[in-house]
Each structure stands twice: as structure tokens, then as C-alpha cells.
Length: 327
Image (cartoon, rainbow, N blue to C red; front, side, top):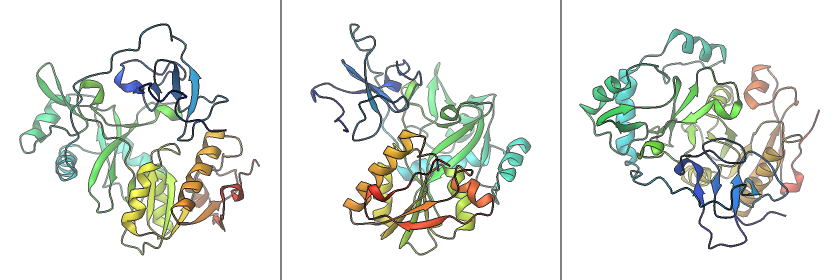
């Protein structure tokens, strides 16, 4: 049974990134929340799944007061301003040969949209942009010791675009990250009192007819798939972060949604439960739902297409019709 976020709605949830402490269950600094009694962890399962994604856990330090939320978080700048700032930033930053090689090996045809976030003088980068554009409220820019700096971990900067192609946020594929959960991060200033980008979706191939739209997880994954399957694609940040996709589907006036998440739902409860919840919501809003499947030896839709395997499509009249093969 899926629970509400808490049995006591008076308990206020605090995102862990606003507490300056990691989630006490999974140890990660984002996507989880705490209140006086519970921890809502989006990574570690329990026997108490929630209706909106994640699992409830008893708070280990419930006898201690909650950490005070980080105050002074700046409001998010308007989309037009963010787009101008990020486009100017792209003119300042290069793309390293190592990152270009990684993208090419991954099958990305055009590396022009990507940049390298250097491990160096971030103040100089911020100064070059701030001379021309107002960077206040733009995630990634924040004050440090009185100087404006550009943040984010060193790695490949990935633009996250809306239906009109505007850069609404930036992710970084961190150099040297081993764990999957640590590989892709939002470039944010929330930890320094600046603005957070939230978890927007990435949209591509909008020049094709919009009646059918593909939905998957991961910008690079969708980009590679969209090169071969010439239909609109929406990439969400994760199976537990699908809510922003609904507004985009509405903007595109889509009628059919092809769900194309990784084929590990047979062994990964988060993927299986998240996909079932997503499909239930899509059907509730009147969309025709199609599930894309492929041999489990190819985990993602990009792996499938890179192996020159065509995904199989099947109509899904209810969440119970979804299939999650294990071999």
C-alpha cells in the first residue's frame, strides 16, 4: 500500500539540501526530505512506499531537533534571463578534447551543445558573464566572500532545454564519479543561499509532429535515442521526478506517450513502482500509453539502439499490463 507522505500532515517536510546535512538513510545530499518523525528517502527502500515516490523510514535521530532550514535561498530568475545567461556562459567555456571524445564514443552526433566545467578559477568565469548579463537568481552563480563565482563540479555541462529550445537549467556529468547516483548533478546555488533549478525536463525533436511523444530518463540517453527515432522526446531527471513532464506533454498537445525507461524494472523496485505510478497518472489524464521494451541485456533505450535492436511497442491499458522482464 502506498502511503501519504506522513500520517500526520501537520509535520513539515524539509528537503535535505536545505539542512546542510545528507539524508540519514542513504547519505546523499539531495532529493530526500525529513520531518520530526520520518525520513522520505528516494533511494533506499522500506515496507512503506509513498504515493508520490520514495519510501518512508523512521528518523534515526528523532530525539534531536531538526536542523534549521537553510535560509536566504534566492528566487529563481525568469526563464528568458536564465537562457541569456547560460548562452553567454557557453561562449566563455570550452569543450575539452576528453569530453568531446566521451560524447562521440557515446554516439552523440553533435558535441556543439556541451561544455566543460573546469577545475579552476570560477570567479573569472562569473565575471566574464556578469559584465554583460544579470546573473542573480540563475542557478550556478552565487556570492563567495563577496565575489560572484560560477559553481558546479568539474565535468561535462549539459544544457536542459524547454519546448522552445531555451536553456532552463544545467546538469553536470561529474568527472571521476563512480556511483550512478553521483554521476549526474544539477548545477545549483541552493547550498550557498542562491537559486535552485528544481528538476525540469529536457525536450528535444519538437520540430517533428507532437501526437506521439517518447518519455525516458536522462538527457544524453534521450539525445542519442532522438537521433535515431525521429519523434519528440522528454527526458526526466529520474523516475521519481516525472511531475514536470505533464506540463510539457500539455504544451506539446501530445495524445500518445511512449514510456521507455530502463529495463531493470524486474529487479529494481524503484523503476517498477515509479513506472506503474507514472502510467496510472498518464491514463488518468487521458493519454494513450505505449510501453517500449527490449532485451534486458541492453539496460537503456540508448544501449538498445546502439546495439541496433529495435524496441518493441505494446499498448498499455492499465498499469498491471506493464511488463518487467528479469532475463
